[in-house]
Image (cartoon, rainbow, N blue to C red; front, side, top):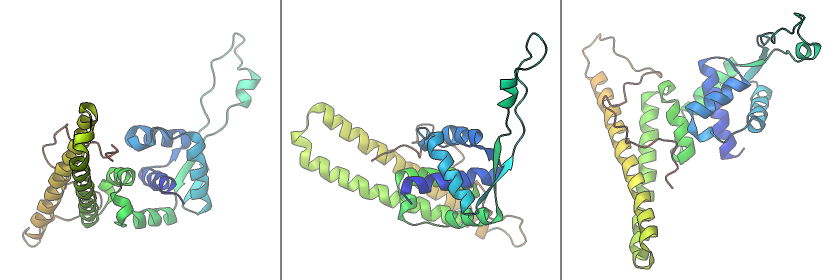
Length: 233
């Protein structure tokens, strides 16, 4: 399975964990909520859904029948319109699918630090355990710091051979990576603060850590911070 298709399967499982949807709703959510899927088409989504059904992670259920088309002058809908009215297929996550998605959420390997995969992982941080979030954030920061070091070394070697516009483009790329590193530093610090606060809470306190907790987000967010779906290569 390619990395790209693996990200799509992960995202589909995550969205269906929230609620059952039909294909059009899924595609819309992928496009609007997860920017990395803006270019995906039905031709890509439906084979993915069929694979997940075959694996036992999804089931197909008949949805509601679309509303009747407008009446004709005689008060009867055309036969062709009636024939085309079919119930949409709704996709629902199975117990096995939920278990598989939770297993995927617990993974924190190098793939989860890469640009597109990190964006998908971050989109479901509300369903992810705090310790896993920390490992993913720290891994992503480490990966970007390595990238930044290579960019700086490359710029130092080639600076004299670059024209002003190419040089400015290189600087812009470095600034984008630096900005995301600062953003990650703030997120990591907020996660640590929340964890330390939980550990130091009085005995018997009702505070707890749940997979849906969003307490790791900074209270004051700067809108200039990067979108995790940006490809800052």
